Image (tube, rainbow, N blue to C red):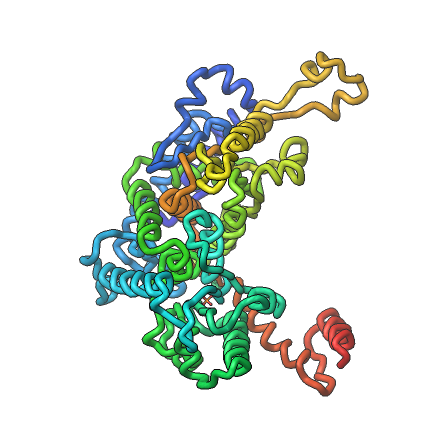
Length: 556
Ligand code: F6P
């Protein structure tokens, strides 16, 4: 950790940025591009297969230099090294933060808190691969001897979003003879819909929960077990515990709770408290994804992560793709007052990527106190949202182009379509898709002036409505194709973007105390809804009235 305990806004580097913002903050991208013909080819960085064009941001080369200096001042280098060495960089939970070890190809030699974490990681990866091969090859059968045809991942938050997002992203690499479903919500319709057309005899549940105490997951898992046991009994097959052993596996850090639930710990794939929930996608939480794409492609994905982990650790900040993403966002959040960040993948396969990033970014950096407990001195985490292009263009892009709020946007595109589209001879459509991927950032940046609109013969009264102000910032991230490796690279880039922001803001990006109160209140309110007799209304007048209304609605 840096020895400088000053609030970040008091450092000379921050003040230099504030002064610089006064000088360049109002400059228009049209002028910045006109003055600097190399801008579009110079303000780019590459890392692995990722190409980041950040030229359409409201910054200059000097801004990047100042932001890099800010990262150094904040101690990003030291904090990164402390993290990868296994120091307890999550002090409020007294934990190491070692998701980078999950994808490290090295198989040993990193001892943290008395454990060789790399050896542990590879031991579990080996067991996962063996299991995935057995399910995929038909050697792992259900209770009745039938092979597994459907895999249902039951988990929520970090135990759902990673594999669910990645299964969709890599659908083209999945075994299409298997069906995959992801159940997360305690809304009973989620489980009911996910299982309604499945045969219990050929269904496998992967119950993923770091703590194995999460209300949503345990409730869904219990109901899934009931569905399985009753379904098998209806087919004439008894033997509850034998059935559960063949149809339920667990992914968790908590062997005791797994056993308590009734899953044989021989069928448990472990991970460790140094893996945060939202950073757990490359732990055993990826099991259902590994079954879907196979161990080999899964390893390619892990290698993609590792490529960016190494790049982040070693590249100077002015050429460091994840650090630049984080620093550019600090520039907008703290100096322009931006409060949101759009992520717009031009890939239908990445439809769940914004949702995945919402947890990663907002659960990590939605904080109001610094690591030492003092209030933050500058605005922190932004609201992250998005939808795949081109759908978003016909929904919310109007606001991006002409609204009154500044929304920096990340556009993500791929040169090649995936094989399914190519096999169907739909490759040509991809050019139209990419034309939109190029057009939107261009329109956002350069817009259209009143003179240009008028010159097209537009009626005078309509001119102001058709003016496009431009100067709306965006990044373009381009990769050759959405492969497992590229997906790993993208996710790792955003993970380190989040870390960069968190270090600059001086916050702990690895705890999430803000989610606890709601959980406690839900368990206090559940009996009020469940009890047959009228409960004691003792919350607040609004909640009490709503409980009454809902009880009435449920006939109580
Ligand atoms: O919502 C809080 C949270 O703890 C997330 O951080 C986590 O990913 C999710 O719940 C699920 O937790 P678990 O994996 O322990 O079930």
